[in-house]
Image 1 (cartoon, rainbow, N blue to C red):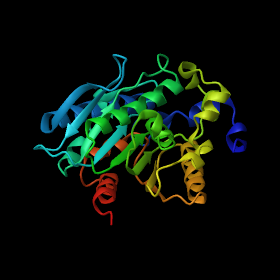
Image 2: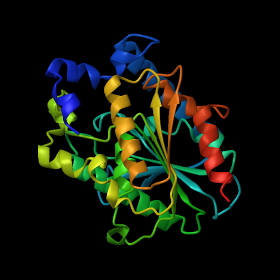
Image 3: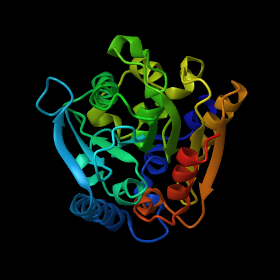
Image 4: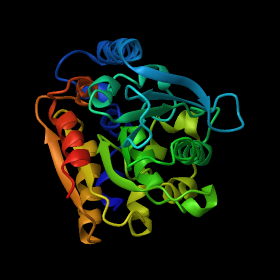
Length: 293
């Protein structure tokens, strides 16, 4: 598993794991600025047009808050999509994460987004525990939900993949996870410890192995939950390799998984476009939720 990336020098690894270097639309600084602007504005729009419950405490720390975007009226039996943001575990927040809520809420789907303690304040174990706690909290808040769907982007896709391996008894809940969308994710953390990304995370090899989805495929305990592994056409070769390797590992374990490359997108607009109802991934989410037998 290590062979292909371990032959790359640090400079090339840094390049491969710098998604902004691979955008076909704009330069590396501009694409990040545009992403923050787009997702912040999208979140503001979602808050303006949907019913919200903001800054709900899901844990003991002041930082442990989540936002809910809710369907109109007083239904209690809606599906819930949990979105986990990216930012290499050290950037972004729920304030930029509600951008996709509007088209989903309009179809009767609740959306939850959450904050976790980004590095260096939070380490990998802390962040993952917070993600799991937030999922448990939204379940307790809305126990009559008709199913939980998980969606994560980049580092958020890694966190979703690890959440699928959770022993939920420890959290006092039994979530009915019915689907997962992992978009432009990282599934093997070993290369990451050799890049600039680890400067803030300070992961050891042991921590990286323990928290690598590729090492935990057999621990996935969501039954027949369909999974969709998504990669952008203009993600780096390493992101493509990781996505393909994880997809194959899931498939070999007999899990229901599909692989989607979204042509014409880079690491950033592949997720930004979820704000559009006619976008291919938005349609895939709607199809997964409503076309189930």
